[in-house]
Image 1 (spheres, rainbow, N blue to C red):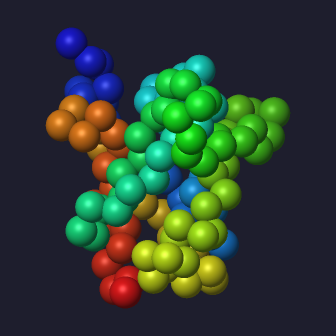
Image 2 (image 1 turned 90 degrees about the horizontal axis):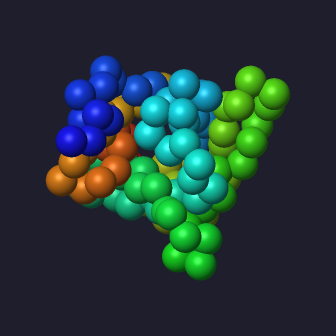
Length: 111
């Protein structure tokens, strides 16, 4: 059984067209993964790990020595109506159905 499904909610930060992933969240959901696919599902953001670099997606870049990561995806967020100056915290939970971290309400008020 996937222990991610039983985990507490994760916190992600959206700011300036980038998605910031704290080291503990990365370790729990994306350990060893270098890229993610971002998808919009109604008002939810899905962050799906990509196991093979050839599969594409956005790079999970190392942000600092603490192991925090950042996904630079201004094009994705702009395309889905999220302004570049939007800075907020998202609460996400693992969705076994989608095999992704799912942040409900990430696109509320977006086009």
